[in-house]
Image 1: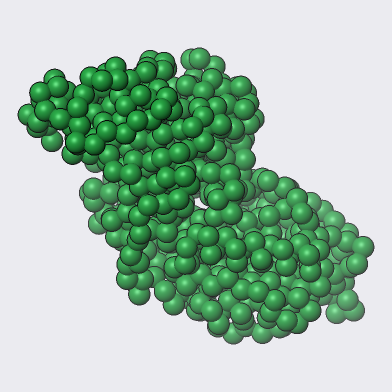
Image 2: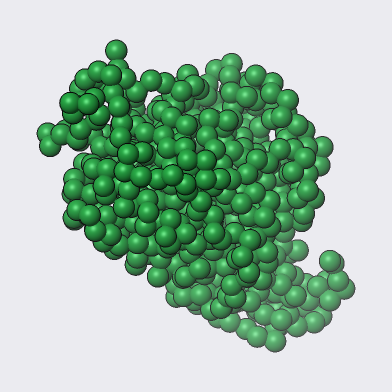
Amino acid sequence: MLTKRRIDIAMGREPADLVLTNGRIVNVFTREVQEGELAISDGVIAGIGPSGTYSGTERIDLEGRYVVPGFIDSHVHIESSLVSPEQFARLVVPFGTTTIVADPHEIANVAGLNGIRYMIDAAREVPLDVRYMLPSCVPSTSFENAGAVLDAAALAELIDDPAILGLGEMMDYPSLLAGDADVLAKINLAAERGKRIDGHAPMVVGQDLVAYRAGGIESDHECSTVAEMQERLRLGLRVLIREGSAARNLATLVSGLTPATTRRCSFCTDDKQPEDILKEGHINYNVRLAIRNGVDPLVAIQMATLNAAEGYGLAGKGALAPGYDADIVVLDDLERCSVREVYKGGVPVARGGTALFTVTAPDTSSVTGSVNVSDLSRERFRLTLTADRAVVIGVRPDDLITDRLLRTVSRDETGHFQPSSDSDICKLAVIERQKGSGNVGLGLVEGFQLRGGAIATTIAHDSHNLIVVGDNDGDMLLAAEELIRCAGGMTVCVNGTVRGTLPLPIAGLMSTETGEHVQEELSRLNRLALGELGMNPAVDPFMALSFLALPVIPALKLTDMGLFDVSAFTFTDINGD
């Protein structure tokens, strides 16, 4: 709200609450650096000018350091950080992120609208602006079982909440292209309310992409090649350049940026685990990496701030100018994007990589106790094959896309799959864990190089059933039983023994502990997987496993209903020709 006091401060007639002086202020409108100071009042920037222009109740000398707007993550799943929203804020704010656009479709697939309400409530009191996109695909397809179904009528219950920006990534592009009535109802709901509509279209090109854009889609974060990015930009889609834990597309994509296209691009992390956040940073890492790959520093800062704010209609965000929120990041170095201090609404909230705020955990009773598995036994893991050739999922390092492979496999005398010491093929199982249906989907996977045990998790995008990979049925069963016991999480089993478990009681997706604690425990599990099971060091064990059940990213995935060919968008027989 505009006040006379703000005008008086801007005119120098009244002192500001805070003046940050002797800074190098990055102007993202004109992409230039101005030496001077910022005057802040009631959480808003009231004035900007040469050092010495304003008086203030408090003055802080920045000693020539760079000052940039708070960074914005234009597409993120908080759940993939493995911590609750308030703990997520403590993770990312010290790296300069002050606003995020989150899609809670992970928890929505488990707990429906209750899950979304929990996420909104949990973020209300933290010094991080958390805006949400309503999940468009719960479940992501009809080829798996999730814990909820959210149609347009259900989404209408929350569409007018101030925390909601629009409709989240439309992953079910085949249904949209077919003009499916349920999908169109969701898009029309958002469009009628003037809300944003996000896309998700890996490898969709040509006329299909034209139709996808014509269906109201406004963005895409699934580009993996420059050609894909350019085609989307030409059709008026905004491109969210992703650098997360599993998918790292930034270095490739920024090589194709031009002066004409940078303003239509912003940065996102999508899915990033606490270990990578603590080690690399958050959006400030995207900025640093972009600069390292040839992007002008001021362009990279603009992409991380103004571009994202304008793309999502975030009034008062993304710039340092009169009338804008005083979400401010002080950098020791522009090119390395090394964060010294972070201000949220003019209040210091982080310094030297440490959060200056504490958080209180909200009530989680509506989103716990979500692991409901029935009729599980060792026999449920037996995989019958009719031939010595089988269709196998091929895992790619640092990529969500898998390969469809045809491999020679071993069978025992009864025709059941038998792991071979000279083969890198393991068994994969997806166990429905929401409704106790008893569904177990079985398949084969190559690329983990796992020997002598199993790993399992209740994070299995997007329906988040229980997924386990192993080289013997006993350890696979043991791993599944351990996650049932602790109400969700991650576990490593070796030669009949549970070697380590990270409980994730919030919907089987998130911990109530700090990001640092979760990082330590996850690192321990990864060390066990790599050291005691000999898993492929080029593949992140649990991150890679969690995406093998996602039936909207090519080429081959496994759901609780069976082996799924994403390209054909139908189930496929595991038995090879």
